[in-house]
Amino acid sequence: MSTRRVPKPLPPKTPCAGSFVVGGSLRAGPLLVIPQMLEEQRLDPNQILAEIGIKPNLFADPENIISFATAGQLLQHCAHRTGCPHFALLVGQKGGAESLGLIGLLAQNAPDVGTALQDIILHMHLHDRGATPTLSVSGDVAVVSYAIYQPGVVGTDHIYDTAMAIAFNIMRELAGPAWTPAEVRFCHSAPRDIQPFRRLFRSPLRFDAEQSALVFSSSWLRQPLPGSNSRLRQILEAEVNRLESQSGEDLSDRLRCVLRNLLVSGRGSMDEAARLLALHRRTLNRRLHAEGISFQQLVEETRFEIAHQFLRDTKMPLADIAALLDYADATSFTRAFRRWSGTTPGAWREALRDPNHQGHRPPK
Image (cartoon, rainbow, N blue to C red; front, side, top):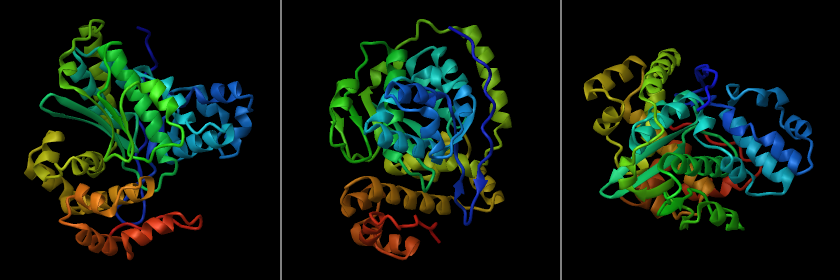
């Protein structure tokens, strides 16, 4: 296995008005194929990139950093300029564990598939500060999901397509070519042409789902990785831990990542969040207090972001979104949404179709 230059920790996020955090960032690694793909379409990559203010040298090094919002804009713009709506899926189809840099290399040297996935999930914020992966297991069913938590990102459906294709490739690399998902889910509406998705995944597809996720038998988590190197893994773990100590990420930032998936899986309690962060409940509460924010405030902010995403990116009925967010009924959800945004979910969804719509404001 080839060695790679050790990545730099991603820069800290920049706070905005209110308690939201914006400015999430992403290593350029998974996007390095884009200039070549544009050339294959007989387009000038430099011109396409310049149209959205991206310099070509971004793609000179996988450790370069691109803002998460710009990554979404880039994928959306490339789909438009190439006339290929599934451009982002093709980008992801060319990626795998190696595109995650040091984290991917650590996962490739895990003793088994389950440990490899936990490596990626635990350290993903060193690679991607705009979304978070999660692994949940219920009986004989495992679900690996990917959820965007940064607000105000365009092109989220394209980001999800790229992420799910990369996740699919990573699972194939870890578990072997015999691995096949029982279902592939997307939390956006179905594209007009789903044949490219069928060709890649060769599995049942579900759009307008609660999460973008791969569903498969949990027995695969015990599958050993025959090529793993325990000595190399120790070296990689030490380097990852060093980067973690330099990451400059607040606990509230990490908790936002965790809550996004906990809430949509019905497990959004403080006890569950503390468990995933390897903290005692009292310790979690004390550290949040020191940052000037409460657990419940983070829950409400995250609920608003989830509601916004599903209203914008899917055709899910309001009653289903209310149930997803654990409200008693659509009326309770509407009341909370009005408190957050000053309008109803239905009016909000209609406003999102207006090209002059200016986004959203944080919950009070």
